[in-house]
Length: 488
Image (cartoon, rainbow, N blue to C red):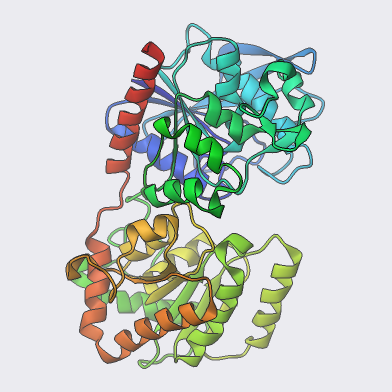
């Protein structure tokens, strides 16, 4: 099967968050399972190419209709982990993808609308046409719409990674890519309810794609049946016949404590005591006091409202009060949140048991996963979450809210019907300080009073399979369904 994945991100070339890891992990595993895979990205000027082959121009060029003009696009290509990556480089005075970053521009909607129109021009070329096109998040939501509008009959899968970002745009943008407003700007298609001048790109992708999924079964249920659907609940119910959830995986070669070159000492389930060498290295790196009586409680997270920043701040303070050492690695885009954590950093600057690093450092992230005892994930909502999967692979026990993929992957040490050897962490339900305190207290008490049982929780998490093998097989089945839907 020839599969084309279209996205705004793909690690290591272009990564701003979990979407980049998703595309990299799924594409690589699909290729290992024998599929022919292409990944289609914008040719950002910020691509990370230092350790990769130089992209080579393709003979194929595109003329992309946009805003009443034809825009010339060059296509570049390079090979990654068994798959080809195609980069679309438009020649426009706006320099759409020459901004030094992936997102955060005032014209993001226009930039990704153009990208979507260019992708349609590329994938409908007779020499290119894939068997299935897999689009991701709002930035590519127009692609299934455009293919449907052109009656292109190219099977499409559309993945929702976070419905908190739906791509609400000015309605005129639909005309810029050649769509008829009278047809497409309706309540059952792209129109934003109560606003005749705006369109919802994610809504369009849901309506027009052959199959739609999100990144965990629990999140699929939540966005249909709770406020986490962010207004999409009725639409998802109407299209539930083609909608479901597939849990993400992690790259088991990148995140492997047996081989990870960014940690202090390699270890695995059979050599778990060697994890202590990473704990010691983490303390040295972060300037923490050496101690045998305090576990390390970590946070590795974006600092935004989705991630439960109020609960993170409270959890750091409460964890310290319960006798843990604290390490946080994270950064915030919102000034008020950034200021709040900067104040905490200053307050604890000389504390022997606290270290806050307000940035992102890939090497430190690996060492935290390898050296911490517990990791705090109090998300208000979490479509899948990679943090808990990575942490468990490194023998670090998650303490998390029972939402989305966190609920799908964590079995509570005390309150679970799962067998003991399947229990791997701590969960709490309500987004309150009291609920978090109870879970923290249970975890730290077990670490202190019953170390053998705590070690078993570590081992349970380390022995589980959260690789991309099973998710990739599920996506292949989804692609087959999309192919059958087109035939019917």
